[in-house]
Length: 229
Picture 1 (cartoon, rainbow, N blue to C red):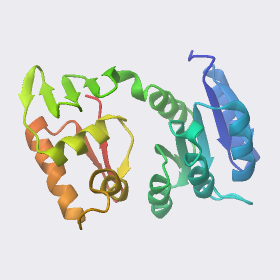
Picture 2: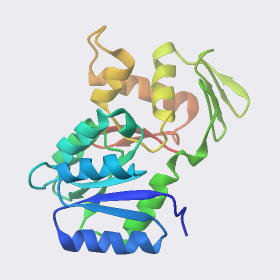
Picture 3: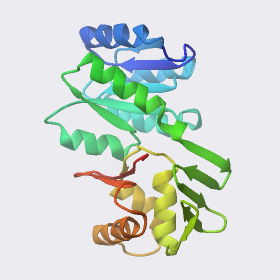
């Protein structure tokens, strides 16, 4: 049984989907709230302040992509987990979702056990990351010190170039979250230089060479994420 204080908002225009997800999440001990479109979802989210929001993509009045984009612009939802429901043929929708700040997606048709397992994992996502201080992370055998630009793996110092370090810190700050190439460029390189996808790939390859293959994984067609070992 999960923390009964954790709140989940489901936003979908199909009553059968709402009922299926609601039933299975309530069995796990979650508080569940419902909305039938993006506009209603934003209204309900402002009232109940959910820990996680599940959004369908195609909905009347306001779709899930626009609802996610608008909520990410509201400070109180900056760190709220947002998960999209997508059909297997909607890879373009998955990319659009990550671009507006989605944390993950769940493929339709929905399989209740897989859904519950994924939601549980997402809500535990930060449990493996201990913030020693505001600018230092300890994850598994890694210690990442943002102020000193130092990385230690199993107590041994790992030498990283500045951009390699910044890329690692970005990914490790939210283990499991998929960062699109666009968001990586915006966060690491901003608009100061012309950077291509090849530049990102090279930095990822160097991180893997120095830290091993297990930490940074590729999400095909979307971007990269940090994996908890």
